[in-house]
Image (cartoon, rainbow over all chains, first blue to last red):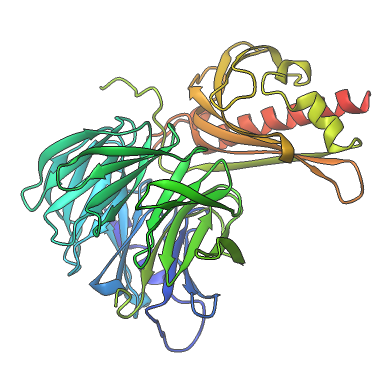
Length: 318
Length: 164
């Protein structure tokens, strides 16, 4: 497969000058124009647009945001991007239909769901070589991993389940019944929970992270596609793709307390310093929300088909 | 070969976005088209609609196309104050539309120069979700089929409302 290495040299920052990144950079994958958009969240401006091979989908970060991985399900590849040296980006040929991805903190191992093969693969993050495989449900989508890297949670969109995989053995530990069309997952470490957004049943399943059983269901409505927890507060934020809104749920009471209008068909979102950054798939822009004030404070043009995002840059997690 | 999952779709969604200007205010256009089950009275490609559940979230409609074939859809969001509703496909029917999964939004807005702007847009996935789809089930086939269906509907609605 000579295809695998082609295109890796084309990735370069369109802006000239040395690459400077900060802990406050947000990287957004725009699927339809195949770019990775870098946004400086402090200034609220796009600082770079990195071309990627076609149809990029989901993104993961490692090394405290210095290393990024983007899946390309339609070409069976993963782009490996060094944030400070984007010219060194490599295209790993992994085959199949890689979609959801998560990386070990040290950037050595990737866990990647194969949309069509109903497995999650453990890959060498440097080469893309398969190290192990774990069985999951149909159409694995969102992934989450505990900080100890001892358990992996996988949303199975067509099976209405979440699979718990034990690491490093990759054994399937448990299958948990959730709502219809689970897509996004997020962990709440303080409350020892996993939240699961179910696109079709229009709700969020609350899973007790210790017992690995369903502890509650929160109605949200209108195709919930993305989830984020405010790490410094008690707010769980959920995008509703058909409602063009973000619901704010109080994670202590599990009640919806506010809804904020955003762009068309919102999907992924991230919370940083009291603000939420919401990628609107249809309108191709980013809505910036002030969470405490429960209002939209800015709209920033991104690109076509924004789907996934992660914080990156030097020491993004500090 | 495993059975094809009933609601399976591929990982890359396709955008469709159709609109039309109608010489009537949004209240008048909504009166024609705002009912979830009203499609057959204004969409030229639709022979009839069997609807249940009215305009409540979770309502269903089964559309029979004039060319043959039927589509089942469910109502996800209904906002009459904004002249807007969103719905999704319940079961794929590749003979009726070469699309494995779709969701769409119908919304009427006041036009800048008076009258209404009607927008009908959505998100869909091609008929064959594998990485090497045949021509009749690829992204272009899906995009064209849905764009045509939406645009024909908007043109039919314009004719009805404007009385031409």
